[in-house]
Image 1 (cartoon, rainbow, N blue to C red):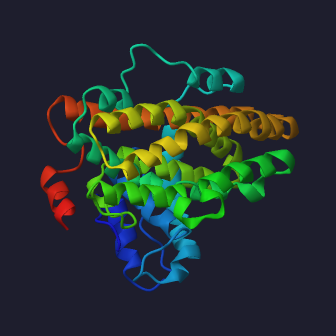
Image 2: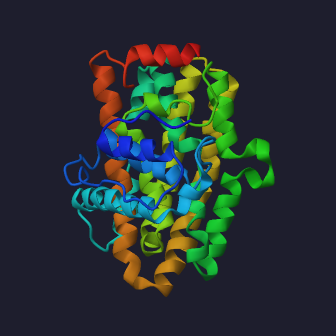
Image 3: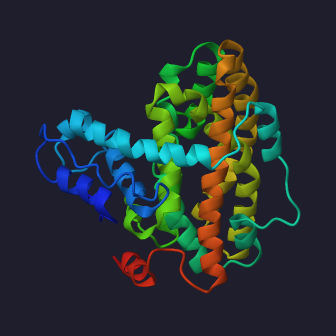
Amino acid sequence: MLPEPRGPLSEVVVDALRHRPSSSALPASAVADADPLGDDVAVALHTLYELHYRGFPDVDPEWEWNPELLRFRAAVERVFLDALRSGVDGGADVEGVLDELLVEHVPGSGVSHHLRDEGDWDQMREYFAHRSIYHHKEADPHAWVIPRLRGQAKASLVAVEFDEFGGGRGSRMHSQLYVDLLVAAGMSGEYLHYFDDVPAPAIALVNMMSLFGLHRNLRGSLVGHFAAAEITTAPSARRMAAALDRLEAPAACTLFFTEHIEADAVHEQIMRRDVIGDLLDREPELREDVVFGVQATELLEARLADQLLSSWGSGESSLRTRRRWLVSQNG
């Protein structure tokens, strides 16, 4: 079903999709004044991008390539992309930014550190809800870049994707393992069930992936993002597995993370050497784009971490309202 609008931009999108496609221009006057990393932009973009994924049952599929809707999306994308670019340092030192991802700061202060050391089961389930927006798609946005690559970079990225998609077994797809995790945690495994519950930071991460994947000129940024995700996942997954063991969580919850510990340690090397290495040998002009993809990922991950940790530190739910969360748990 269509999401709840959270401002004038998402209202325009949701209202349009409730009707048949037309050639009328969508009003974009509110784009310039919107918070590029706020809820309204996040919901508007995610709804527009979802037309390229599973779509919505009651929405005419002809909307996917409607020129006026695409023109409106481009306007919203520009403010989002400009905010990402202005929020990072930039540069062309690919090796440097990737090496920095491998540095383990002691003591750690991230979300996985908190959950490992002191988080409770309610906070863990809130984390599951936030991450469901990403993990329901898992590797889907990365697949957009495959036809944009050549040679070893293409072959190696497909090898990583093959693992993400369960090595040819539907029950082992990482997106399915996350559904199993949610169900084992007493939550809904329905696709995007918690979308209306999570605030902008969790949604913005997925929007960034879709943005990079759907634009050929951002292929280097998508590869940079994918590499950053693979490099940082294994140590984070190890901490999450320890947190779930401490909380005596169901085995299906832990399995999702233990699956990533070994797999992503291997993927890290493939992404660095065979994907990024070959890509930049062929197209060295993409170095800055790869760096941007890494840094934009760090920027948005940090915003999500701040949302979670500041809420929990204040004794509050990290979701939009506690009442909404309780209803969604019982629904």
